[in-house]
Image (cartoon, rainbow, N blue to C red; front, side, top):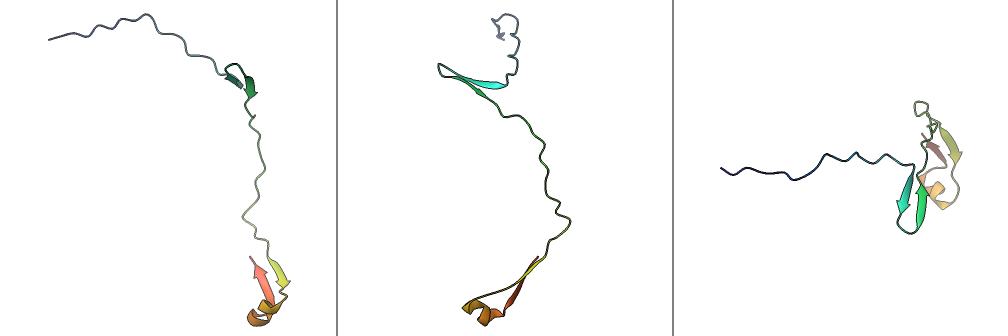
Length: 67
């Protein structure tokens, strides 16, 4: 039965993370920073009522509601 020989030295440390992208012969591009954004509260619904105008309103009725 044949054996497998591994010819290598000790492992190399992984590179450290950088806050930018390095583009060869062109420079660096900074990565965007993480920012906490306020999201809208979807538990409360805003109801909008209005009066339609035009010929379509005459055919379908004059009021509308958006929930």
